[in-house]
Amino acid sequence: MEVAGRPLVAWSLDAIAAAERIGPVVIAAPAGFEDELEAVAPEAAVVLGASSRSGSVANALSRVETEIVAVHDAARPLAPPALFDSVVEALAEDLGSDGVIAAAPVQDTLKRASGDRLRVSETLDREGLWAIQTPQAFRSEALRGALAVDAAVLEAATDDAMLVEAAGGSVRLHPVTEPNPKVTSAADLALVEALLRDLG
Image (tube, rainbow, N blue to C red):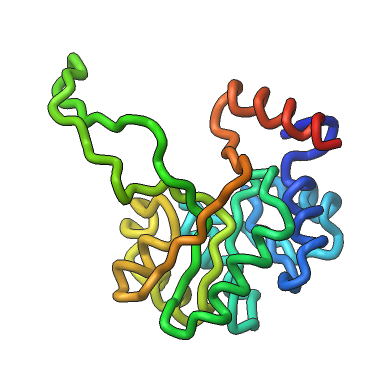
């Protein structure tokens, strides 16, 4: 997918290259796109992704030898270099944590709905609730252990931090103050494209 005239992944790769605390890059590629990603990122190692997000992370992690690893979704092309450095630095300094993850406090009112007619059954208290983003930094061994679970558990995971938490690990939030939206719809793509063109 292209955004603002470049492959979506290229924006994240630029930010990673400009970060001071990030080393070698491993990309988990969808089947059939390995050659294309190797052309976009010739200095990165490209591995075959899996059927789940966390399965893809596990495949990429097999190529990592560093004590700390940062995981990022290419669908968040606005993450700046400083954010990558910040989550890695925060984890390196906090010996009591297994992970540090980018997050923003929830601003919207949240409601739980039930039934086919989507009737509101409950309004949730948003105090203390955070929307989780990437990049996320982990101690590599803690992440490896958390990913060593049944494939069905990997399929159900919406982020890797929840697997680290489920394995008994300690995960800390790193507040994000700048826009870091994720491209999941055509409307998201239009918004991100406009923001990237403004930055360019």
